[in-house]
Amino acid sequence: MKNVNRYDIWEYTVSGPDKGNPFRDEWIRLSVKGRNEEREVDGFYDGDGRYTVRFMPSFEGKYSFSISASFLNEEISGEFVALPAQKNNHGPVRTANTFALAHDDGTRHISLGTTCYVWELQSDELIEQTFETLEKSPFNKIRFCIFPKHYVYNLHEPRSYPYCGTPMDSSVLTKQNFNDYKGMAEGNCWDFYRFNPEHFRHIESCVKRLMDMEIQADIILFHPYDRWGFSLMSPEEDLFYIDYVVARLASFSNVWWSLANEYDLMNKSDAEWCAIAEEICKKDAYRHMRSIHNCRSIYDFNRPWCTHCSIQRNETYLTVENTDNWRQRYKKPVVLDEICYEGDIEFGWGNITGEEMTRRFWETALRGGFPGHGETMTGHDDILWWSHGGKLYGESPARIEFLSRILQQVPGNGLQLDDSMRSDELRSVPAERTYRGKFYLFYYSFMRPGSRLFHIDETTDFDVYVLDTWNMTQDYAGCYKGEFRVELPKRQYMAIMLKAR
Image (cartoon, rainbow, N blue to C red):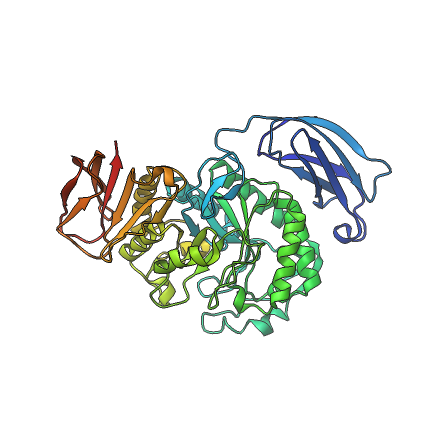
């Protein structure tokens, strides 16, 4: 049998019946056993009489497998070998040391995300442009939907639909009537128990390319911005959909599950959300990251199924300033997936400046969280990164790249606020005790001091760097110990980094 690299996808396809509704009438299942792990995973029907099972080995070595199916008279069995992982694949991201993130092989993960809701449902040309932009960007996580999205600036039909059926005629859609989607959904005719494999094969190809680029695919399973009826499925149809998506995508090492974008705008009860979460936990053998995203009401991330917080700001101003409070409340990694978008559209969530986006990234990071970017710049044929992908035009991505380079210098598993911080600065240290006293990062946000007096201790030699987070410079200011003063240029968005020798 064909071998596979650790954390990559081993796949086996079997021919079977194509009559009736194979998605509902038939099943296929894989059992895998290695020296260090044993898994059972569901397979899926991929159309045209093809039934596929997939497996992601978490260890190197020999594996044995057996495949059973509703249409097989006897099991198919065999062996394969998991070879060392490719250098750019470190396995799924996990929670590490309560508040941090790390890959399965222990490699630290500093999540700097972006949002492009339906970039993968655009034209081939626009998708390729998105990949080219991501290749040059600092972002290592991207949030996007499986279902198409109906919202202002995004009123056209997607390249494909997740189900077999007939979409309604949307030629009458305008920016003025786009909110009236309930009546529009009645014009659709879908079979919610018969998937469109081509839709999912295309999404898989995008997830695979992201995996090769070391970018996490934060997959949004449900959302309310809908004119096709996908947000109005029954609880049984929801779970049928979850089973199929997990069977197809869970073997990709870079997958995260986001149950919903703005869950509190959807007509689902808390019990229904919990049932969806339980189904993911049951079916996902690899325990990928799981969370849910809010509009007005922040979810209770103390729920055991949540691996991390996924938060959108729900106040006009305060969001990133609450990062350390959420860390203490939920005792989990805090990912701020929406802190407003750099842009110029009419909505308050989409017209902050590049300076403000950069400030929010720095504040989130120094408070021990993981910030998320978005861009809604008009003037480019209504192609907005936040929904369509394409190109980035804002000023913040380059500054986020600079922040990423600084965060890579932090020892250990990330930052947390120092208990002795002053009210006129953010003072952060590495989260692990072994590194405290050896590294400090001070951020002055919109304040502009002319100097800062330090006295860490009498014995430690510190290399001192002055950081201009907007102009993206790191200037060496000398080596000091005891009491010393660092001069600053009286500009906003400055920072100071101390690294013990």
